[in-house]
Length: 214
Image (tube, rainbow, N blue to C red; front, side, top):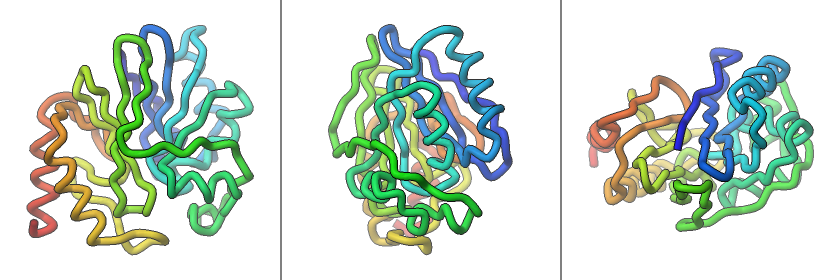
């Protein structure tokens, strides 16, 4: 499996990753879409003729999902989000997705809910869904089982954890999710914002756990 990061169009966009399996290609998060022409051009270049099959959204917030509608228009992929964060995307809820706060809007979109333990075979590599509520009620992390790469969304980063003071956030849930991740063997850390760590990602989880006083 190869992981490629799509160049960041705006500083407040989420990180966007392409995950290449032997049979399928997945995109993880979509940014705000405010510079969607640049995003699509960069994704096309990285795909290099391959089909984009799947999109995974780590949570509902606009800086991660705002670009989804353009991605759907261009590639017609299957789209997946955590069970409790899929509903506002299906409904086109621009309030709880923070679309209004970002000065954007969320149209109604076809999103399939995923649950803890669901797996997706890209060919040679399996992506496993890990439910990690806290930053939002439906936040997920995604683990590449074979390589040990963890896509952590805004659950935790190299330098801290996601906020819990936004709609559906919960400090107690986030603490429980961090402790849950301690039982997951992973190596690379591909978070929703900030730098990528290709080796030794577990130490940043322990750092986050310590920061939370756990």
